[in-house]
Image 1: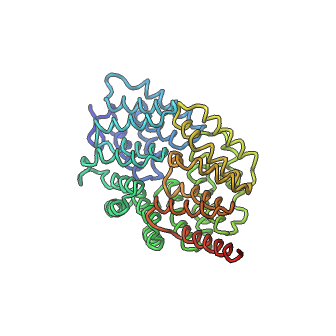
Image 2: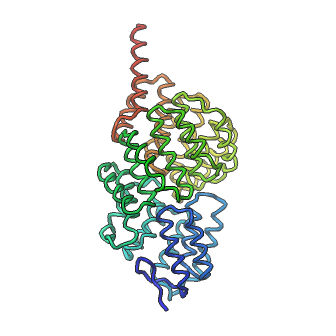
Image 3: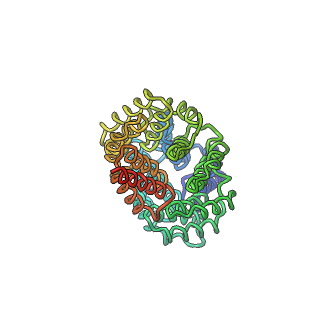
Length: 451
């Protein structure tokens, strides 16, 4: 008996229970729910030869960016490859092919392959969300937006995933600088689906980029239920709240959120590490004493120096290690990036060569007080820094370090130019820029008075 999923597409399964669990898996994945792996496990238990479920497992493993999970992803691919046949749907075979490309290190090719799935199956919100996730890892905001806009007309009020697709679209709009449209789309998404954590997060990004910190605080504080169901993504939403308080100079509240929410659980997921490392860096750049908090992060990162799966992760490991006085481990991580840069046929190899290696060198130099060389290295990485992945808000830690390196090296003109360029890329002058421009003005006035 033929079975179809919630989006009306055929599945090569026989069990009604497997289909039900599969639909719950996709719904949970769209909402970043902690229950996603539970539902996926139930689908595979109900139908062990469920090819699409094995493929999803493979993608989920690879997106975690951990070297020890590549083997699990490979096993899932091999199982799915064994299961699929000419009797399988074209969609199922295409998913398997895309996962195979990801496993070869061709992340761009995998994302392009999933976009081709969307051309044939435009109402497949799982394929859409996977494309968004892969392009996010590459920092490809324009690709995220292009992918959604190609199929957006297929998501009407009757499609169960429409609010979540709108949340994804809001984020893509924000990352490409269309802040007004991003805010409107994100607000509508959350209004229609109260568990659309990505939509809530997209609007928070708009507030961050347009210097609306108080609105950002109100937006998040007034609806914590929209991300309470989440997996570790909830830590990232708390991180956004901390950024708003940081911009307002409310450092005690930032530290409270760090301890009570952002790093309450000492996980070693790279996204959680990046939340912690980038926030501590921002605090230290503002002159805040963060105590011994680097020690916890650095101890975890010492075990990740051979990963090399995601350059964004590697750079945050370097940041934590260098700031946490783990010089040798930071150098080991740098060597991993350098080694990966010698494999330019892979997506992360290319990113390592163009941005990862010079950025890592700059982070280590900054931590060692070698600000002139740190500025040179970070500037060398800057033209390609978006390709390391993440969002504008996340990569802003590298912008701040570049600007502060210029300030500490006594290069006021360079610092001012960098600040203006950063502001141009954002939507407004924020508290960080205001404080640095004021500092430059004071230093220049002191120099002029001494002449």
